[in-house]
Length: 253
Ligand code: SF4
Image (cartoon, rainbow, N blue to C red):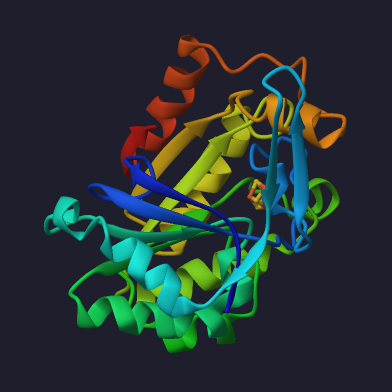
């Protein structure tokens, strides 16, 4: 059984091709800009959209066979590249539980992408080696203290996981969220580039901060720390992209 927040069909931003994204519940980090706040707690979350008169509950345990069935409904649209993406939350917290789902889909020649912050013990990755199409891994800052204090995790553990995955020939794309007040300095970007190069990374996607999650915080009755923060402007994004673009195959999503 997997603790699922939501299943999204026909996603185009969660890995190559057209994908079905299964958002899993529960995260071990607490990024204040998070745009999927309903996935952070492992407990069910009730979102009340008063104006639309809508209530949505995120969080239900589903058997992997049932999830596989829903993912396979879209098989004809996947082509060679598309497939399942496991996102969250932190999907790797349920790695033992989703292992069987990957096998069920592999039997039908549907591949799996994992979208993770990778702040979990390396042992969780070991059984997945050679079985994942792409690991999409968030790398948020070069600064261990800032990562521990603001995000709540161990930055070095993340970099070590990235390094071990690339050493073993796994397909890794790093995703760097561009977050005001957090990692938009050129200095941070330069140091992050050095760390990622050292970890064998070849591709980096930049994900500029947006406020699309605001409505979810309101629906949860929670305050959003980034409610009045403006997204980075095109000049700011280009300035950072020019730094990453010197070292990596770099896109802005
Ligand atoms: S790792 Fe992702 S899901 Fe978890 S708190 Fe941060 S942004 Fe949200």
